[in-house]
Length: 223
Length: 103
Image (cartoon, rainbow over the protein chains, first blue to last red):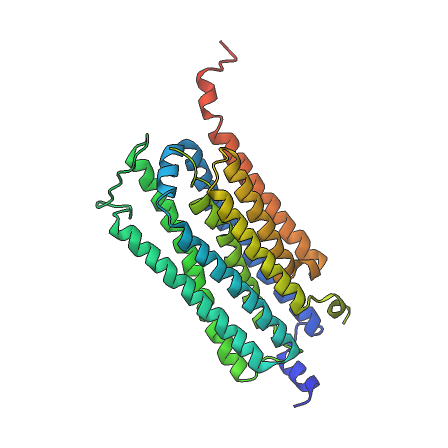
């Protein structure tokens, strides 16, 4: 099929040309991501306020985090961002096989992240650190254990929402893999790959802030 | 298309990836040192540098249209307002107990 026919098929009638269509999609995706920034921003603001109010409890809760697992997951996510950006790059060049390999690697790294997160959640569960009637926390420090429960509530809410975004991202990657295998992406039309890329990098961005806030900043402090 | 001339290469992506890994190693190392109130400041500064690298190169904001750049800048600005106003409320609530301007 000649390129101009592919272009006609992919171009929605209300856009002047493919470039116009892509610019609109990109801005629309960013608007969605901006709402996500504000949404996660509210959680970050809550975390900040509580950390200032219940500093000792925050230090105690934060020190139960396994920095090694958090760091491994950070590296996994950064690697997945590289493979994602490379799949966008190869999709733009029309290299279907390389696009598929990079998308698959991104998916595998995403699943690795979720696996490590599951190991961490299991550890918190076993140590009775999940908020609720079985919550039990006895570490040295001058604080009310209920305040540590708030720490863990925010920890599970924020990392849980982040993990939910990863699961949705994994679904989107599978969708891209199927469409890529069908040859739907060409050097002229590859907007879906690029938009999922933006989403995937946004999820990475959230983790870039979650990792220091939850694992690192209170590691050397004394409650 | 003129935008293709400025498009990032695989080399750029790999360089950004290495920078992100190095910054991660640095921030994990710094966490083991007791710097007092500086710990969060250093960690969040490194996180912001990492975030900027992801935004500018992986999310290609550097090569985006002016409209997208303005939109994202506005979002960051409003996020800072959200945090600033929240803190200026919570951190000053205790003040009213000892500042009585009308007494």
